[in-house]
Length: 407
Image (cartoon, rainbow, N blue to C red; front, side, top):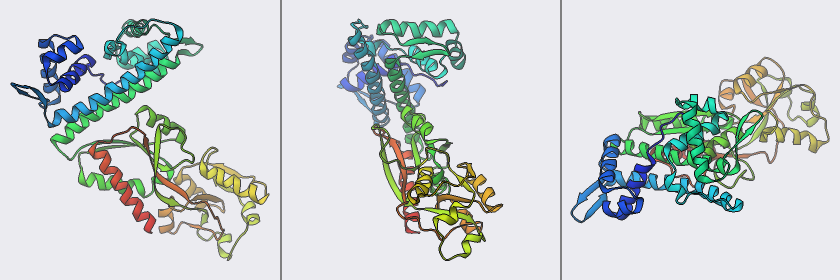
């Protein structure tokens, strides 16, 4: 993670001025001189390209872009306080004596070092990833550990491991930096409402129609928007969402919700079907049974996915052994190639093979699969507050979901 870490001292000063509407009151609160606060705000305004405060004889008041940015800074500082709170609780359990006002003493340099070490699990690799010397990174990390008065790092056989309080602090720090980035996005959107940025975790069931439809619609409205789509196993995507690397996940929802800091919203229900190439021998029959499909070779999703669980349960409920020849993959291109060139079968969402059915390549077989419709939707962090571009994208996802539901 080689992202720019903002000046936390300046952000705290900005927050204090916004809260008190007075530079002198803010100076007493954050122990920074009035000229230094004035200079810090002027520097922020120049960097951000907006006026944050309206200076009047009766005080200083947030402008419209100032209010937008302040909301994000406030959320950012709240995340950092939450992370520091875990460190303080750990210190209390150990009878340690951490520095007073630890959250106020935390610096951007220390955060940068901590996050880099968490990602690399090695001091040398962490220093290289952020472009500073190893002694400088090591010093910043140990200064933070000294202020916390609790161990943050442990030597293990493969490098450096983080302790529990350090892990929590890193997660909250990453979410804090996401809020800062979203603040920058909202200021850019305030200047010109055709931009925005989204990082979407995409699961297989969303890639055929739902995501392409919503992304194309968003880019017609916001041609300067930047959209990144990340594929991967659900567990990896969920981790990225919770760490703030992804804005939302789109695909099959889990029941129950895997962890309480994310929330799910269903867009439509998608049934499973036993699918084969057009012209498959079994497609000529009026109805087929479990014994017919058990004799076939199969292409199936990897273990741990909902569809794989349905596949195994299908045969278990019938008391029939699983087919012997199984190829594991979730890649639709590979599934299409394997099925069209053989008599293999697969268990798959009808929405996922929408195009293959339109092209006359694949078709569902006459095999009844009751109670397999799964909710497809989006997953976000519980406390996530989307930018205007992200909120619009969610609206477009819902519109695409309604189209699919009506089909």
